[in-house]
Length: 214
View 1 (spheres, helix red, strand yellow):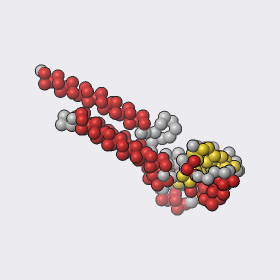
View 2 (tube, one colour):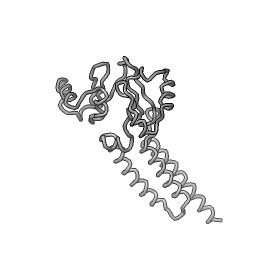
View 3 (cartoon, one colour):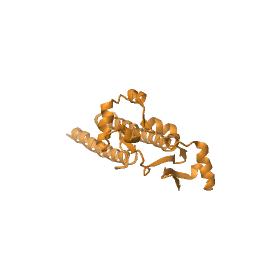
View 4 (cartoon, helix red, strand yellow):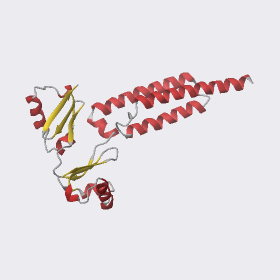
């Protein structure tokens, strides 16, 4: 009887610890609310976390101290990966991805559509969802890393393009506005900004460069 009580008592403690760890990880290491959808990194975090928690709960040979050590190591690795993703272009491309431009300057990129397995029917349906009936009405169309379809109509200059994100130059954003890094650095010098690392975000909106410092 005492053995059974001890077993289920330990199981309850493990469940409480597992719930606490899951809340912490999902709160601080995955997508925040409605700000973004799940990325590849979020999926990896949730998949591995579920495996760690299930083994800890069901395997009686995994002690509490072993679990604490494992989740601590896991947390340190995830922290490093999150910083790599936030502050480097390489990490962002690997774990979040970059947009895929389907239409640029009114021209349809059929080769990229083929690589992404997007049919003409899929494209037409995505356009109709945004009340656009003809490809000729589109200036730019791209698939975001989260799968959303972003469309800019011809003549529409209300949209903004991020060209600096947390001190990192977004070359893809520069290409979208048909500018280069030399142009960007010249603009920053005119605004008396010497270090790009001081910039939290810079975006091109309605023909103007808007900057927010850290």
